Length: 297
Image 1 (cartoon, rainbow, N blue to C red):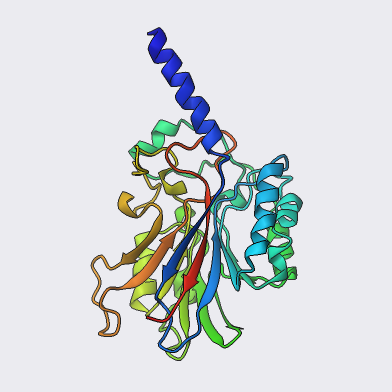
Image 2 (image 1 turned 180 degrees about the vertical axis):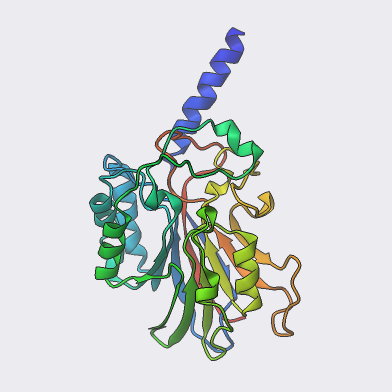
């Protein structure tokens, strides 16, 4: 029993330590239209920021040294009612460049204590008694900096010689998604057709794919957060399979694709940078940001 207790304490200590081992990952995605110049996209997600997280703030600020062409944040910026200004400060250097974002459930509602074993039974549910967070102030700060809010919205932007047709939805995990508000074929003349969502629910992925999206960015899953050795996720907290809880994959389940897209859309799911303040652990699943280099095939 004593050995088991020591092993358990050691595992917990490591999981707390790992939750602060911020990691930059890279990937190349051949998703642009033929002849388009390459573009670098920094994908951030699930910051779950609190005012005391100086190490996370410093790490985020240093990402600006990468000089991404575009930053996309797929929700859950906040984890505290006083975190709006600190997270905007942490993102400050990146806010000097182009950006897109959507919100997640934890931007709207204050985090609460929950039995982590409950995630094994299926996606979490929103408690009726959770206080609201000042998400409107967060959106105002990001929009004032020039970033585009894609919560059930769409936009077109130019990056150098690249044309991007982008659309997104509000958080599907709590039923705020309204894909009908942006549905329809993507611009066939765009160099990149981009979809953005916080939680990668199949109902959203399928509809974006059917409309001709090239690349979908999402977060929410925390990569499983507590994984088996090798990083295999046990849960995703949504209806996507655990094999795609993080990283770069294709989305093609149950779809009939156009002849120019026989393998379906690219999907990148970020394991995110944070955790709930009530469960500040990660196991075989380091917090991450990803620099995606998008190229023509």
